Length: 194
Image (cartoon, rainbow, N blue to C red):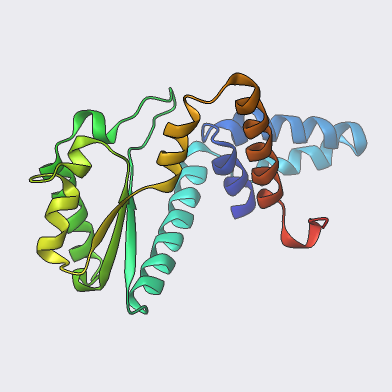
Protein backbone atom coordinates (compact mmCIF):
# COMPACT_ATOMS: atom_id res chain seq x y z
CA UNK A 1 0.00 0.00 0.00
CA UNK A 2 2.79 2.42 0.86
CA UNK A 3 4.43 1.86 -2.53
CA UNK A 4 1.53 3.53 -4.35
CA UNK A 5 1.65 6.53 -2.05
CA UNK A 6 5.44 6.63 -2.36
CA UNK A 7 5.22 6.73 -6.15
CA UNK A 8 2.68 9.57 -6.02
CA UNK A 9 4.88 11.54 -3.60
CA UNK A 10 8.06 10.86 -5.59
CA UNK A 11 6.36 12.08 -8.78
CA UNK A 12 5.26 15.26 -6.98
CA UNK A 13 1.69 14.67 -8.08
CA UNK A 14 -1.49 15.66 -6.20
CA UNK A 15 -2.64 13.09 -3.64
CA UNK A 16 -5.85 12.62 -5.61
CA UNK A 17 -3.91 11.15 -8.56
CA UNK A 18 -4.27 7.60 -7.24
CA UNK A 19 -8.02 7.77 -6.90
CA UNK A 20 -8.77 9.93 -9.94
CA UNK A 21 -6.25 8.60 -12.47
CA UNK A 22 -4.40 5.44 -11.41
CA UNK A 23 -7.34 3.45 -10.07
CA UNK A 24 -9.62 4.03 -13.10
CA UNK A 25 -6.77 3.11 -15.45
CA UNK A 26 -5.95 -0.02 -13.48
CA UNK A 27 -9.63 -1.05 -13.47
CA UNK A 28 -9.85 -0.49 -17.21
CA UNK A 29 -6.76 -2.63 -17.84
CA UNK A 30 -7.97 -5.43 -15.57
CA UNK A 31 -11.39 -5.37 -17.21
CA UNK A 32 -9.79 -5.71 -20.66
CA UNK A 33 -7.32 -8.40 -19.56
CA UNK A 34 -9.59 -10.35 -17.18
CA UNK A 35 -13.20 -9.43 -16.53
CA UNK A 36 -15.52 -6.86 -14.95
CA UNK A 37 -15.87 -8.88 -11.72
CA UNK A 38 -12.12 -8.83 -11.02
CA UNK A 39 -11.86 -5.17 -12.04
CA UNK A 40 -14.49 -4.24 -9.42
CA UNK A 41 -12.29 -5.79 -6.73
CA UNK A 42 -9.84 -2.92 -7.29
CA UNK A 43 -12.41 -0.66 -5.61
CA UNK A 44 -11.13 -2.18 -2.35
CA UNK A 45 -7.72 -0.57 -2.88
CA UNK A 46 -7.60 2.51 -0.59
CA UNK A 47 -6.32 5.42 -2.70
CA UNK A 48 -8.33 8.39 -1.43
CA UNK A 49 -6.70 11.78 -0.98
CA UNK A 50 -6.75 11.36 2.82
CA UNK A 51 -5.26 7.85 2.70
CA UNK A 52 -2.43 8.85 0.37
CA UNK A 53 -1.75 12.00 2.39
CA UNK A 54 -1.68 10.02 5.65
CA UNK A 55 0.73 7.44 4.18
CA UNK A 56 3.05 10.12 2.78
CA UNK A 57 3.02 11.83 6.19
CA UNK A 58 3.88 8.53 7.88
CA UNK A 59 6.79 7.96 5.47
CA UNK A 60 8.07 11.50 6.07
CA UNK A 61 7.85 11.01 9.84
CA UNK A 62 9.79 7.74 9.54
CA UNK A 63 12.55 9.41 7.50
CA UNK A 64 12.74 12.29 10.00
CA UNK A 65 12.88 9.90 12.98
CA UNK A 66 15.61 7.81 11.33
CA UNK A 67 17.69 10.89 10.44
CA UNK A 68 17.39 12.36 13.93
CA UNK A 69 18.40 8.99 15.41
CA UNK A 70 21.52 8.97 13.23
CA UNK A 71 22.40 12.54 14.24
CA UNK A 72 21.99 11.77 17.95
CA UNK A 73 24.36 8.80 17.63
CA UNK A 74 27.15 10.86 16.05
CA UNK A 75 29.86 12.90 17.73
CA UNK A 76 29.31 15.81 15.34
CA UNK A 77 26.86 16.98 12.70
CA UNK A 78 26.45 19.79 10.23
CA UNK A 79 23.36 21.42 8.76
CA UNK A 80 22.48 22.79 5.37
CA UNK A 81 19.90 25.56 5.14
CA UNK A 82 18.21 26.70 1.97
CA UNK A 83 14.93 28.13 0.79
CA UNK A 84 12.18 25.84 -0.36
CA UNK A 85 10.18 26.25 -3.54
CA UNK A 86 6.46 25.78 -4.02
CA UNK A 87 4.73 24.04 -6.92
CA UNK A 88 5.14 27.18 -9.04
CA UNK A 89 8.90 27.15 -8.45
CA UNK A 90 8.84 30.27 -6.25
CA UNK A 91 11.24 30.47 -3.30
CA UNK A 92 9.44 30.67 0.04
CA UNK A 93 11.87 30.69 2.93
CA UNK A 94 14.41 33.44 2.41
CA UNK A 95 12.33 35.81 0.36
CA UNK A 96 9.85 36.51 3.14
CA UNK A 97 11.63 35.54 6.35
CA UNK A 98 14.10 37.32 8.61
CA UNK A 99 17.28 35.79 10.00
CA UNK A 100 15.81 36.02 13.50
CA UNK A 101 12.73 34.05 12.46
CA UNK A 102 14.79 31.41 10.61
CA UNK A 103 17.07 30.95 13.62
CA UNK A 104 14.11 30.67 16.01
CA UNK A 105 12.56 27.96 13.82
CA UNK A 106 15.90 26.13 13.56
CA UNK A 107 16.52 26.38 17.31
CA UNK A 108 13.00 25.14 18.07
CA UNK A 109 13.57 22.13 15.78
CA UNK A 110 16.89 21.31 17.45
CA UNK A 111 15.36 21.62 20.95
CA UNK A 112 12.14 19.70 20.14
CA UNK A 113 14.11 16.80 18.71
CA UNK A 114 16.63 16.58 21.54
CA UNK A 115 19.64 17.45 19.40
CA UNK A 116 22.76 18.93 20.97
CA UNK A 117 23.79 22.28 19.51
CA UNK A 118 27.33 21.76 20.81
CA UNK A 119 27.76 18.88 18.32
CA UNK A 120 26.98 21.17 15.37
CA UNK A 121 30.31 21.91 13.69
CA UNK A 122 29.21 23.14 10.26
CA UNK A 123 26.51 25.14 8.53
CA UNK A 124 26.15 25.41 4.76
CA UNK A 125 23.90 28.06 3.21
CA UNK A 126 23.45 30.11 0.10
CA UNK A 127 24.71 33.68 0.08
CA UNK A 128 21.42 35.34 1.08
CA UNK A 129 21.84 38.19 3.56
CA UNK A 130 19.40 36.61 6.03
CA UNK A 131 21.76 33.64 6.17
CA UNK A 132 25.18 35.25 5.95
CA UNK A 133 24.80 38.71 7.48
CA UNK A 134 27.94 39.18 9.64
CA UNK A 135 26.10 40.59 12.68
CA UNK A 136 22.57 39.23 12.61
CA UNK A 137 22.46 36.54 9.92
CA UNK A 138 21.69 32.93 10.82
CA UNK A 139 25.37 32.00 10.39
CA UNK A 140 26.27 34.68 12.96
CA UNK A 141 23.64 33.45 15.46
CA UNK A 142 24.44 29.73 15.44
CA UNK A 143 27.92 30.11 17.07
CA UNK A 144 26.16 31.56 20.12
CA UNK A 145 24.75 28.07 20.79
CA UNK A 146 27.27 25.99 18.80
CA UNK A 147 30.73 27.48 19.43
CA UNK A 148 32.53 24.99 17.16
CA UNK A 149 30.33 25.73 14.14
CA UNK A 150 31.98 27.04 10.97
CA UNK A 151 29.95 28.51 8.13
CA UNK A 152 30.60 27.65 4.49
CA UNK A 153 28.91 28.88 1.35
CA UNK A 154 27.19 25.83 -0.16
CA UNK A 155 29.23 24.26 -3.01
CA UNK A 156 26.15 23.72 -5.14
CA UNK A 157 25.27 27.41 -4.89
CA UNK A 158 28.84 28.40 -5.74
CA UNK A 159 28.75 26.16 -8.82
CA UNK A 160 25.36 27.57 -9.83
CA UNK A 161 26.71 31.11 -9.55
CA UNK A 162 29.80 30.22 -11.60
CA UNK A 163 27.72 28.56 -14.33
CA UNK A 164 25.61 31.69 -14.83
CA UNK A 165 28.46 33.29 -16.80
CA UNK A 166 29.40 30.14 -18.70
CA UNK A 167 29.17 30.29 -22.52
CA UNK A 168 26.09 28.50 -23.92
CA UNK A 169 28.16 25.77 -25.60
CA UNK A 170 29.91 24.85 -22.35
CA UNK A 171 26.70 25.19 -20.33
CA UNK A 172 25.00 22.71 -22.66
CA UNK A 173 27.79 20.17 -22.07
CA UNK A 174 27.65 20.76 -18.32
CA UNK A 175 23.84 20.37 -18.26
CA UNK A 176 24.14 17.06 -20.13
CA UNK A 177 26.80 15.84 -17.70
CA UNK A 178 24.67 16.79 -14.69
CA UNK A 179 21.61 15.03 -16.16
CA UNK A 180 23.69 11.92 -16.83
CA UNK A 181 25.12 11.83 -13.31
CA UNK A 182 21.68 12.40 -11.77
CA UNK A 183 20.22 9.63 -13.94
CA UNK A 184 22.92 7.19 -12.86
CA UNK A 185 22.53 8.15 -9.20
CA UNK A 186 18.76 7.65 -9.39
CA UNK A 187 19.11 4.04 -10.53
CA UNK A 188 19.21 1.22 -7.97
CA UNK A 189 22.77 0.03 -7.36
CA UNK A 190 22.11 -3.44 -8.81
CA UNK A 191 20.88 -2.00 -12.11
CA UNK A 192 23.81 0.36 -12.73
CA UNK A 193 26.10 -0.57 -15.59
CA UNK A 194 29.77 0.21 -15.11
